[in-house]
Length: 98
Image (tube, rainbow, N blue to C red; front, side, top):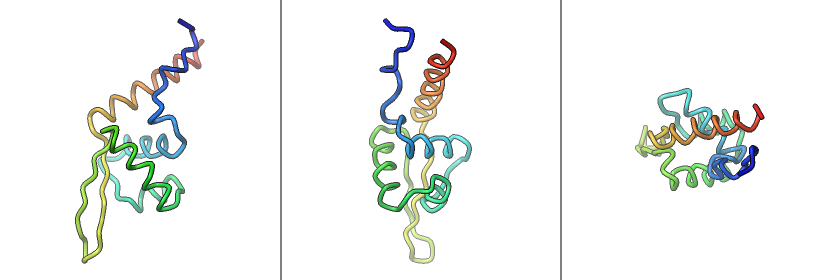
């Protein structure tokens, strides 16, 4: 096995937008769609696709409700997502320390 085993890097997280979303969510309890869109500087459609991929991996959970008759989606890391993010960071650190 190589000392620089890039295959241990989580492909779900290893995307610029998904990584940014995970980094934002690890620092807050939850965030709505517009907050995430602003923080990661993504378009609605692009962000939606990446959020769906994180949700399918069970790294984030979404709660949808209505505020003043407008739909609002709130996202938060799941325990599995928090663990995956920590593992992702650990793997990057291992690669950088070699």
